[in-house]
Length: 258
Image (cartoon, rainbow, N blue to C red; front, side):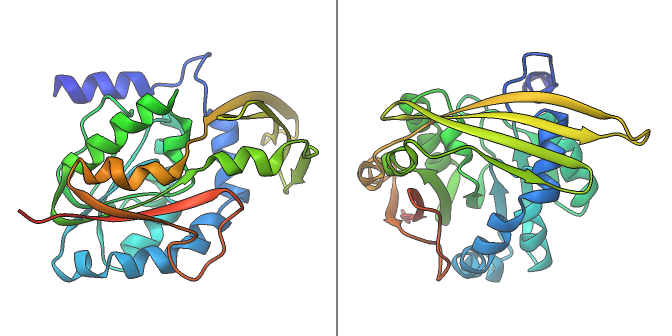
């Protein structure tokens, strides 16, 4: 109970909470569900053996529950986790039928033992450095039961190289707007500077700025790293037949029996 309370405390939104505070969490839910919809068919096919044995799926970086909804509707038992309290609040409203919805802050919080781990929307790329990514991968490998499935996406070094010099972009919804500028301060860092606007019930607009600093990795080394931790994995261009954004890689693996 103490460990869970400590994790929940770290998820409480503070003024300096770096990622996905209330406004951006809502904007992401309302306007950026396309990635979960895109990858869901491929992820579900990979998880078919887990569904057949009624296994438990742990989702890392569940956000507002966009992929979670696909998993549950397919019949999976899902423990949905995230490091953002605002995202967890949305997930509790959107996927109340999950097995559990809980705060989990990688790479330090323990991942529950499970039959599959999924993570889409590159949540591992939000860790502070490559060493933290390695620790999270090792923890994921250790949490999988024999035969368990691992499926996640992560930003390769190509992600930054392909977007160097890219212009900023803006998107507008009925009650929200977002303007994003990009920078690549180093080959292994990708930064989004976002101005997020949301309209309240009284018609007035508020603004909140977020800076997202992502670590980029050479994904070619991931299979060897996971093999050392008992997971046979490959890096792919997609989970299935979908087309992922340039530089985003799918990593698919299976815990070796024995």
